[in-house]
Image (cartoon, rainbow, N blue to C red):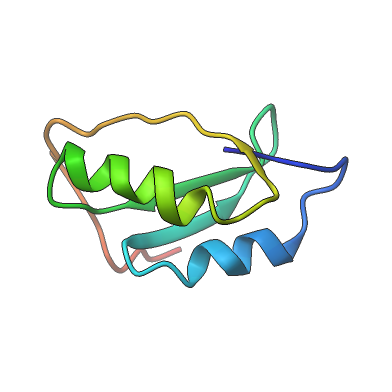
Length: 80
C-alpha cells in the first residue's frame, strides 16, 4: 500500500488500525509504505473493504492485494 507524501506517517497507520477487518498494520521500508493483514469472509467483502473503508482514507494512493490460498503456519506469540 502506498500513501501520499515523502514520509510515511503514523496518522495513516492509525486510521488503518481502526478498521475492524484489519488484523495487522506494519510500516515497511521499500517501495510500499504499509503492509496490512486483513481477514474477510470472501472476495465480495474484500472488494467492499477496499472501495469503502480504504477509499475513505485520502492519504492512501494505491493498494496491491495478495490473497492467501492456504495457511501452513500462523503464530500468535513469537518469541525472540
